[in-house]
Image (cartoon, rainbow, N blue to C red):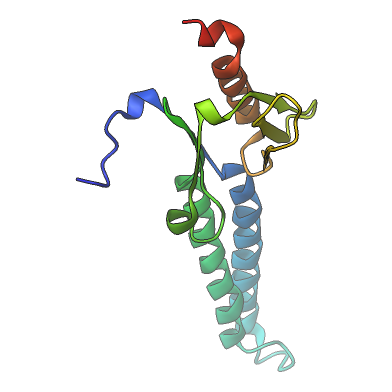
Amino acid sequence: MAGKIKSPEKELRFTRSGQATVFWLVAAVLAATAITLLVTSIYRDINPRLPHPAWALLPLTVSGLCVRLAINLTRHAYLILTPIGIEIFPFFRPSQTMHMVLWQEVNHAEVNHKCTRLTLHHDLEKTSGIHLSLGPIRADRRTLLAKAVLGRLSPAASND
């Protein structure tokens, strides 16, 4: 049962659903292109210069790959806030290269005014830390993430 989450109600999971939108749109455009190629192929006897219907396989295949990638981005986590710390999953090989930042390692955090970057500082002088892009997360979820991280690291939260 190593894959089971022990207490999922105690974690906040943020996916790459902001990135997935682009791949959903590309998949839709490529699927429409494939359908157009298939539909126009019925007029090849009138105009032989129209492309062969087999050309529809190329955009249809790439569309399928984009759908698969979009589903993967929507389903799998980018950041997970747990009682222990923040789990960061990179884009490539996330299960092997996952990085865990413990709450005790973070002195304070900052979010830029556009809410597109989260900075976790390890010391007061701001000489070491981690910059995380919040671009992969949907825009309406970024404020929730910022509120959760800043609330966890606030002095009032550490006194409890």
